[in-house]
Image (tube, rainbow, N blue to C red; front, top):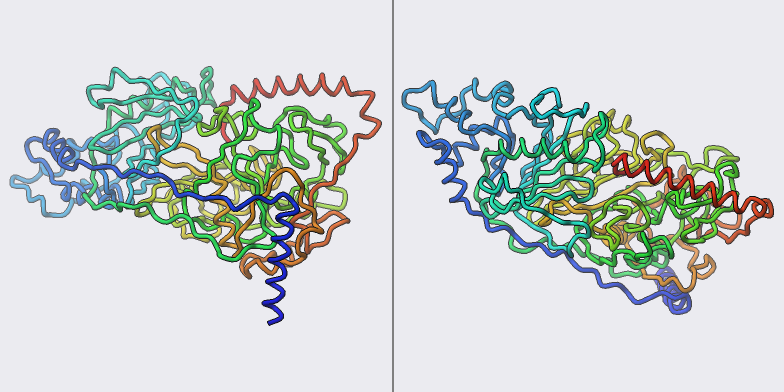
Length: 605
């Protein structure tokens, strides 16, 4: 009875504070809009008969023949297109026999790796080949030296992605998406279109009633040995498309309704609060625009960090953030606790990664904040691409340090799926192909070395909740960013895989992790620690912070309330006044130089 009364009292106090502190009514989450494809398998069968007129295989026979080369190919509910010489492969299989019997199993000679290499038009299929109930995805690669006729100058392997999806997610029109027809391919691919969106050259087309996508990561700039230009990527894509043939697939009944993505606890959390989607830190929107007010929960996922609490907020425009190079205190005054402001938000900050404002509710969306990455769903067409998430606490490296010790909190798989990641890469994709659902998630800033050692590479299957890494600060080098996890969501659309706002998907997942529903907060009144209950009992046992991971909080806070402490305003010291104009000149110059460099490097992170 005492416990029931205590919980009731906490909820009553939270509700009272909601009215007093500018907390808004609950937000209306919505499921994604998904359209299934109407697969024309007769067209696929007719195409097989046309390309192998003497002894055309049935789909079942083709699946049996190619299964040793492309494991699980029969699981695809859409025809699998690959740069595979299906006619030559099939003729090689039946040629040794005067009276071929298609019911027999594949001969060993036709199933060897050499047979696959012989028929792959110069491309190499990576271990990432993932057919499932809603389509298939595959990653292939080649080197410039393998195709000298293309005249490529790019040195490293070039990765080509192809997806065939039985589902298409319906989104608002993407900003900056200007597809153009490809005349030279219209005969083979009626209606095919080319566009450059979110740093990828993309070819989208319909065949057999199914949307297909071929894409290559590139940057729109001059040719460089270490940077693949979109002009060079286009040559590879054209070669890839011309080599496509049906390699398998099985007619299946597609799930008519998308899965239920919204599941919220009934109880109200006395602590967890969050700003609405699209409500960025004032002034941090790109080119004066706001955020993306998307309330869609795109998937029912497990929260990407193993333990609660966790804090979704901007790592660039909060304490120790770099303001995305838009102007801040000079680096030579960068000492622990030194005050500064981001010029575009004018928010008082300090050089201390452990400052209370970084490890505090309410959460804040930063999907469309000022960054220089292409994001079709952001009003400016540019933004951050995902959500920054900080773990439970920051353990400083030593008493005088202003940086957090990395690699202390576990990152987990949000769903069952397959890993898409080349060794050495700092990006980890988790691709999910489930009934009524085709989606992928991207994780950033974990250690590439640790990921390689743990086998988090192409083709690895993981289960929901499996540990796949630790929160880090890696961005091209150790310590290249603050201690946080970047997390984003991509779905297949008419323009291929498009980034969508993951904020509400994360809010919903976090509510299930802590066992309590969050409350939406307005900007009008900041939340003060004394206004909320000093109790963490709403956090489930599996979400509690471990003793060894206790938060490093400012001296005016206690661990019981560290989740709601905001950074205290600070005043600019007198020493800053004499160099005000110098600061401005230096910041403007540095910003221009870095902006030009970021433009040409064409990288995502």
